[in-house]
Length: 406
Ligand SMILES: C[S@@+](CC[C@H](N)C(=O)[O-])C[C@H]1O[C@@H](n2cnc3c(N)ncnc32)[C@H](O)[C@@H]1O
Image (cartoon, rainbow, N blue to C red):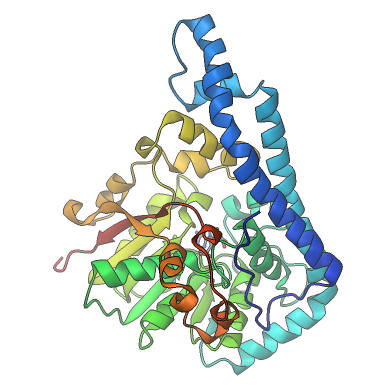
């Protein structure tokens, strides 16, 4: 298996015993085996076996991802792949739960102390009710989801996410799980030279993985992360303080925030939209338009639309909808997001899809020197080979600019 980044330790991250760490590494390796060992086998199974059977019956090849699913589901190879993928997903969260539960009282105390010492603001709302699309099921099989609270000042699901997201990404998001934020920051630097936002909002920030790079890139800006999950916002604030980064966090719904009209010059989100709903998404896009100052930018990094890929790739990616508790995953890729932005008030010629190359890939070319934060020094002392980094691509971003004049 590839030797990817180890996670950078920080004071809020739950510590693992030897046995816990071993189970976690196993679950990460199992996930890698499914992705790199089993997944590539699905294409020949489809073209050489399942598609041929369909052609014999219908006189033509399957046309779309739904027909492909129909012929792949009964196939034993596919069944083994899908079952093992689900088992690996459940196993990775389970491998972290013990260490979180064992240390919960210390984690809560630690979060309180770091938050109290922070220069930045934490806004919690005791009367807040998270939307159903977040609480109705455990998204991507993470026990408790983002919003469960079982004790006062609970941070358990947040600690679970911080460690679990590293295993989920198999280390490819970098030592601080912040590759999406870094990648969009690089994109902003390249595509919008001279742009200096005074206030930045990260919607659906979870524990702040992607939020912190914006403060690094724009140290003079007032940076906010918001999320509907109470525990993740609490933890995010403490984690940022522990890492010495001055970012404000608030428990708010991106559909209707408490900020004033035109307060932000830059609004970003990273893989939030696909975890909302068909009703919420247009509201969020409208809220972004309201919150932006004239000439301000919004950048949502999320899933590429289905029409940009082959039906077989659509089928593979849509497995998340079917087997990983991601009910909006596929539906979101069929929404006309450009139209959504135009309907919300963004000028049509300012709205576009683009790709932000993965920062981690670019760092591979420069060596670990691409990671300059002190907190990422864990990687600075060793050399990395290109094969250690995530294969391919970048993050798909939807970018829009509010008109300079109303
Ligand atoms: C996959 S996580 C995002 C990860 C995070 N942005 C990062 O880069 O590490 C999705 C997050 O969006 C949050 N979320 C979903 N709907 C939201 C809404 N309407 N307003 C604010 N946050 C929301 C969830 O609670 C969850 O924390």
